[in-house]
Amino acid sequence: MSNPWSAPPPRRGGIDPRTAIWVIAGVALVVVLVRSHRVHTYSLLIFLALIPSVILHEVSHGAVALAFGDDTAKRAGRLTLNPVSHIDPFGTIILPALMSLSGFGALGYAKPVPVNPSRLRSPRNQGVLVSLVGPAVNIVLAAAFGVAFVAGVSTADKLVIYATNGASGPLWALFLFWGGYINVVLAAFNLIPLPPLDGSVVVERVLPASALPAYYRIRPYTMLVLLGILLLIPGALGRILSPIIHWWASLLAPTV
Image 1 (cartoon, rainbow, N blue to C red):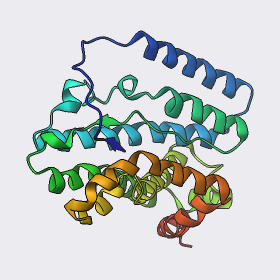
Image 2: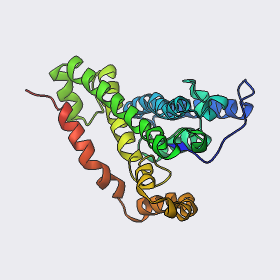
Image 3: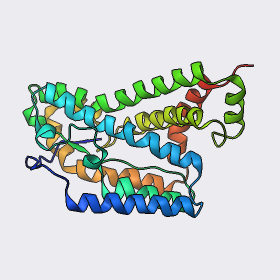
């Protein structure tokens, strides 16, 4: 997800000590979870696939914005594949840890790359591309993982992976399986048309200019609507994403 409303000062260089502390704490927490057997192998594989997928998603926002004239992300030092630069203390460390401890798997997000639409040469038109490039990157990554899985994994290993719902099989094959899965989820979730998710840019683009001031006033609170739906309606997110995930799984299904 991109955040078009903040433009931090230029990066001074070096690693923020607070970020370094969070990284050390996160690594220590992962070690504790693994040693206590609270994290399954497939959860670690999901996490390993999630990190580069989320980073590439975020960096793509800043890279396309830079191509259209906005160097905010570049000045903030965010056009890098270094994971440390993209760590969000809650979304990258606390949330995945809590979900792992609760037995819900691993899910998280990176710190949004800052984008300033007013610096784009054509803010309303190019802003659409800046937002949608993130899910597009996840779709490309999902396709790459999927092709590698279908072409490189034997039918016998595919049958084992499907029989165990991705919990057993060669580690490299499981990584391809979960890498495609997590990128499909990231793309589908981010295309939900509610701010601050990337899909909201489509709604914003079709609104008449006269309606934009009112939209911008309610925009900061719409995430509460999404959270309310997820909390008050059990399985709501699953019902939204399940058809896409099942379709994806059917593409990878072994043929015998």
